[in-house]
Length: 210
Image 1 (cartoon, rainbow, N blue to C red):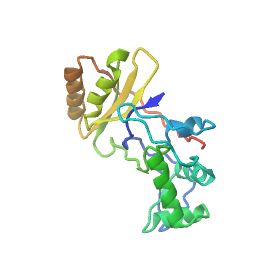
Image 2: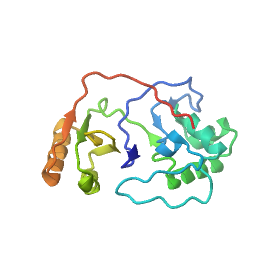
Image 3: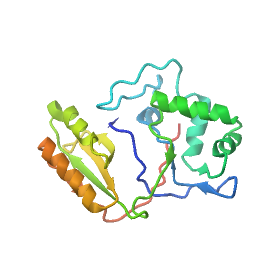
Image 4: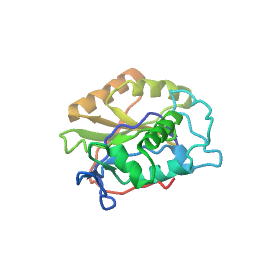
């Protein structure tokens, strides 16, 4: 599986562990954006490239290190909501605030993390998410990916080993905007976009141990 585009926040909120917070609040809808390099954690910790975005530069240090693993595991369950959230989060990991921020920045720059930030439930905010897929020949795959990625409504764009080999999510304020994005993709690529609207929602608290 090759990740094609950085993720955008469209996941629903899920409860995790009991809150440990400052100011009495902790978000449980938070994404550490773990990339495939963390999911598989090969001995070389190789970071996979994103299609259409070029190869990630060779890393000067082995990532993730032990501190990185600790923060990745911790932040998949939530993050403090307060005036100094990084300070509180760092204290829980026996780190100082500057070290924590530096490690997060290093992981993002290296591509080990694809995203670090809150997750918003688009439907609760009045928006909509629709899963979609395309079946593309290998000779045109990368060119079509570039065209798909031009649409701001498209997120979670993945390549799969299947007849439907490109999967993504359309997210917008209204169903009409998502449909317009899908229709535009069909027009400029010449390939159909197969829609898979949600029929029932299952909450799966996926956590990827680093």
